[in-house]
Length: 116
Length: 112
Image 1 (cartoon, each protein chain N blue to C red):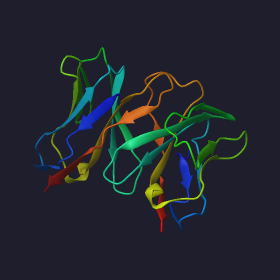
Image 2 (image 1 turned 120 degrees about the horizontal axis):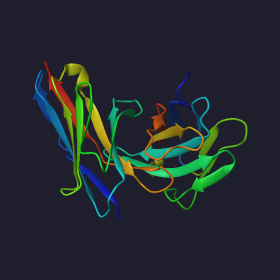
Image 3 (image 1 turned 120 degrees about the vertical axis):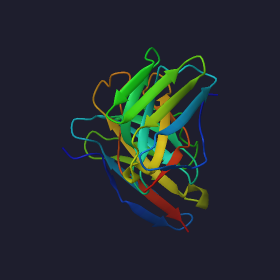
Image 4 (image 1 turned 90 degrees about the vertical axis):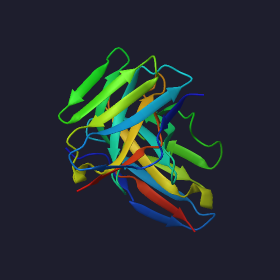
């Protein structure tokens, strides 16, 4: 059973370009969470999605950031017009359908975005 | 706002000793706390979960406590090994959607 798969592992973008980060949850999981980890900081929640639905986007910046989890295919975190401050590690976590309260999160290896 | 704090200073101990890491929370009462291990360049890996009505939880050489009076969780690694060297993250529930609130982590270095 493959774990949470994220790609690319490393992504370099110039300021003003778009960054697309992909996350395929564990087999059988239909809930996806995105977190951002800045250098010397903890992981910060960004968004929680189920298939075709955004459940909680309270941690998403108001502009330039969007996320989707289509019926088919991976979840996508999109950052438009990237700036240097977007440089960070972005982690995806998944959980099974109807997640029980108090359940562990399964994390991917992350995508490290560098904006130059 | 809800806040989780961990000692940002690295913890250096000798192999075979017990490592104790601290996690404090403020401004809320979490239903549970989780501990994760994170190695450089890797994603967090779940270790233990302890609920608010549990005082202590054990798993092999790991032990976690939850003190709701002190608003604190302690994470212990007994008989520590150099392979235990990593950053350890404390996390709590962040509401009904199962999102997690993380501390900044504590770097543990076990010297042979």
